[in-house]
Length: 293
Image (tube, rainbow, N blue to C red):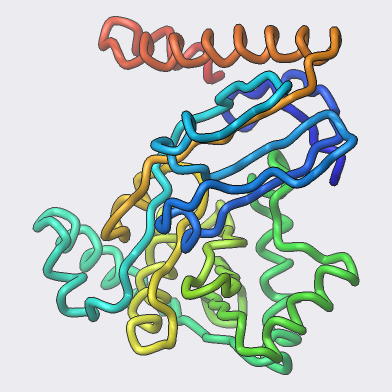
């Protein structure tokens, strides 16, 4: 059980949050694809947060006396690494292949190079360089989702590396790291855990370039899939070979405060969904730009 901040969030901005004691059940990609219904352990907290639950299983969750709410819906993308690099590349659209080729050539012409890391000793060299990039990213500044630097988290990464459960990559301009990717094993998949790039190099598409090198490496590795985890994005769509429709499901005890929380979250999430649909209308493009500012 952990303290979870239930956020009222617009993009990367958190407007408010409500803290609750929840049991968090995060389904692995293997579990999501298997379609097994998760069992809720006994808890004396406020409830449960189930992430990456296949959308088809929502009606099979037995909430008991808990109130249930879907917080978000998304596709969980993944790349099937068993098909081989040639089949993966052939599966890309012509436009995607052309775009990827152009970006890789641009990075090569600029002298950018990729370094790979997997052992505990190599992680010791990777971590400070990747941290230098992470400190400059929006993931760390706005989402508190940078590469961890606390001692316990670093020890955990070293333990994973020692057990052949870590893969990491850096993109460098000379001696300057400009992008990093740090992934850990979960079952048969390698997870897209920590990623970021220096915004000063954004015109070089560093994230796409580094991901292309990582995927190419992984076709010769031991993993069955590359797991892009929760959430969507064009970057994930480009490299993925498949996806599964998922939801994040919140179950809370029906106390007065929890009912109020669910009502507020439901109203907010509904308003955000309507706003997202509305901003797709071409006549609202100008308004969308003003809101984003």
